[in-house]
Length: 209
Ligand code: GRF
Image 1 (cartoon, rainbow, N blue to C red):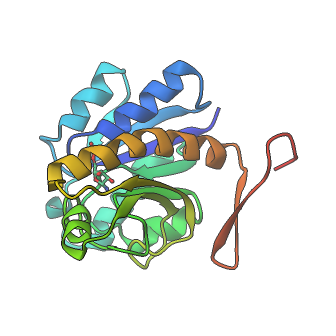
Image 2: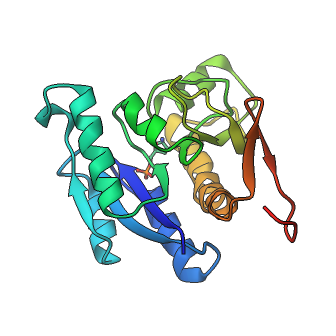
Image 3: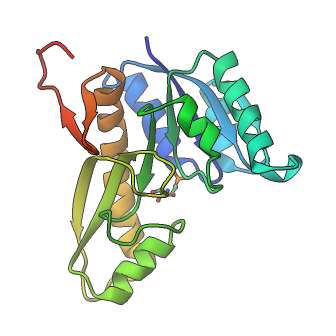
């Protein structure tokens, strides 16, 4: 059973969606560790309710981003984590962590990348409304050192309505995140997603990964 580590900073609704998919049997994996950048993240309670081990690695407790990165790598290795998910994780991840897990770290971003890259929610949703786009959505992608620019694995689109607010658009996108992230993780952890030339290719079901 592949072991997933989830990095969080806040609410944790995507973490919850992952845990639900595991319970429902649609994602064959185990969350072995949740690392939060903040001690007060509600996501920690969600993990605890599912008896998932947690730890807090707050960037400000370290002299440099590199030292914080080493602490993250050590915690992930200790928990035998093979795949890492950034689920509402706010800090910029240290490059050493990304290099330790090449094509094994995924992020969910609340826009159709490469549009409205950078910035945490609700900035991408706010920028989408300001730009007047008629369609927005979410993207699940592999994490590389260029922020929000790694190979795209999956996207889901939602309509943008004239009377949308940041809250209503964010809620519509979030519903898709909760479906798309576990579905994509199922493909990734089954070894069905490979990166070729900065693009991802998905091995059809039934073929050898
Ligand atoms: C989501 O909108 C995600 O796309 C973004 O941050 C938000 C996290 O929400 N990266 P939650 O903590 O999973 O509820």
